Image 1: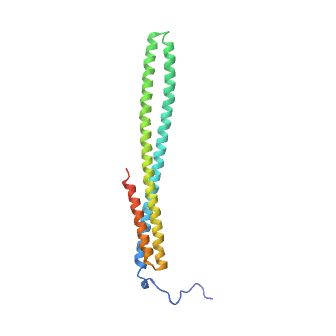
Image 2 (image 1 turned 60 degrees about the vertical axis):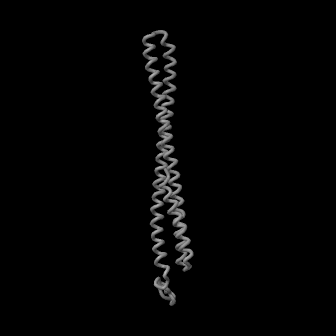
Image 3 (image 1 turned 120 degrees about the vertical axis):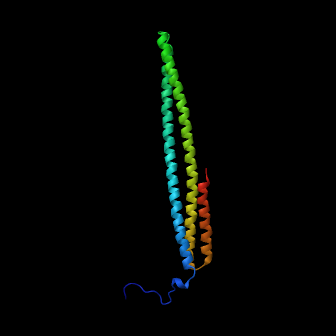
Length: 179
């Protein structure tokens, strides 16, 4: 038995099949598009996670401001009770704590708005990522179906793969149109 393997005597080369070159080029282009859309999807998912983390940080800050506000309101109540002992000092403390209460309430509103904006950005990134992921899936399916052409020598698989790949490109492009 000879080492290696031998090709059958009636081996057909690429020059015998006119579909090999165009299908191979199509597969190469689709593979590059799959890589690009995959990269877009990964980056968009990363952006989504970053926005979620930032929003969570803002909500934690909101909670901290709420605690401080509650404490300040408690001190203000105590000051109102003690103010009757020393009117001048009590009025100074009352003004101080009233300003702090106002400050914390204002901060909470700003932080809440920021957190909601970040959640909106997160949701937009999630919708974009879904489009890129769908486009990637369609491109991969189109790539596989196109490759079947090389095995079966039937153009229908090539055209079918092209149509599905085009749908994937279109779906991925809609990710850029979302605002």
